[in-house]
Structure formats: C-alpha cells, structure tokens
Length: 158
Length: 152
Image (cartoon, each protein chain N blue to C red):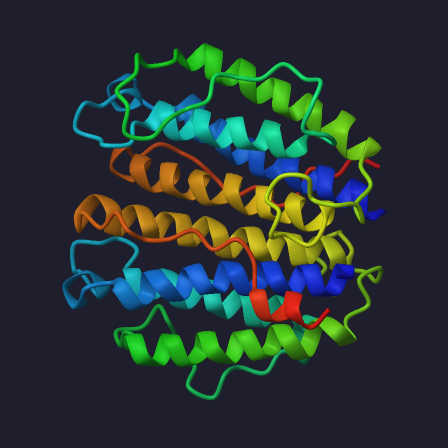
C-alpha cells in the first residue's frame, strides 16, 4: 500500500470507531442537560473538522448541506451525525487521492505540510472518540466497544 | 518535512498530551478502586504498546512487564510511568530514524507496512489519552490539545 492508501485506511478505521460509539450512545446520553460538552456536539465537532481539513484551504470549504450552528439550541440528531459521518468517509476517498501531501497545509494556523495535517486530523478523531468511549464506559457501563485497526477494503484494493 | 519527521512530530505531540493527563491526574484518581481499568494501568498499557510498536524489529530489546487486563496489580507509581514515557520519546527519535516505512509491520500482521503501524500506534496513544482526558473532566484540571512538535 502506498502512503495515501495507508492514510485512507487509518482515517476509515478511526471513523469506524466514532461511528460505533455514536450508534451505541443511548438517547439519554445524546443530549444530556448535565453535560458541559454534549455527546452529540462532540461527535458533530469531530466529523466537521474531518470534512474541513480535507479541503485544500479554508476558502474551499463548503458547509455540509444540513449544517447549522452547533452552539445553538438545536441538537443534531443521531441520524444526522451518522449521515454526516458517511459523507466524511466519502470525502476521505475523494480528497486524499488529489491531495499533494508535500504542499503546505492550506490553513495558516497550521505551519505543517498536508501529510502532517492528515496525521493531526486522524489524531483529532481518535482523541474525541476516546473521550466518547470513556463517556459510555463510565456512565453507561458499556465495556464492549471495539478497537478498529485498519480498513479491510482499502487493503484488498492492493 | 519528510515522512519520518512528520511521524516523529506527531508521536511527540500525542505523547505530550498523554503526559499532561498523567501529570495532572489527582492522587485519588491514579488508582481509584471504583475504576475497573485504573488510570495508571491505561497510561502504562498505552506506553507499553507505543514502545513495542516503535521497535524496528521484534527482537534484541529489553521487554517491559506486560500489563494484563482484568488482573489486579499493585499500582505503578506516577514517576515510574513518566520515566517510561521519557523512554518512549527517546525511542521515537531513534527508532523512526532507522525504520523502513515500506517494510513489513512486524507486529500487527494485518497492517500493510511499518508506516501503517506507526499511524495505528499514534491512534492508540491518542485514543487512550482521550479516555484519560475524559476521566479527568470532573476535576477541572487544565489539559490541552497539542497539534505538532516539529523541530526542523
């Protein structure tokens, strides 16, 4: 596998874990009024930045058609976040092949190349996914959330 | 920056986040009997695999004590875990420099190559750092996101 396929495989593995924790989140935990950072808000934030940083630059970013202010009063539903996650997976497959990994990041607050930006983006997914796993583990006593190591379909393309 | 420098920068960033969680962990949380998986255990487990998957070959190195889920153990002191973290930081600089990124993963056999093993390892560090950050949330400790640690 080449570098771009490895990046796609690891993006999709991280997103599969995020999908798992979203699907398993009980309705009571999705928009819990006691949470400073709501489960849905963190899940949406994570997918949003996957989409955002896969673009060439900030000026090229076009909001997802169902986007609205996540700091507002209207929570995204679980189905909406899962739909956005499916869109982000497609973005991974479409954007990575046309991304010049040696080019500058395209986002001036990140003085790194595109390759490092993908690593940062994947780590960002995994950080919040870890937080959400812990949320369900501690509060909902959910111990069977799985680790996903790679994406089999990408590997089978070889 | 070349690929190896990117990998090193990202390892050091992920480890800096794990270190923040360890340093900021209050004493009562370190080995809280209410936790099934103790804070110290998750921190050590993360470093154990980070160290192992950084090795360019699965031989000729000093093995660490393998952490085993579900077995009660005496808590490892925080200083000792932080020493392990320092060792992993050194390994990042030494092992990645010598690594053939196109070579066989050598460990998790289902992964395509050494490059994928490094991204897998990075995700593993970050996932557990995320869990530990969430565990510290009720204690209002200041812990932040670290993007990169590149030194050119």
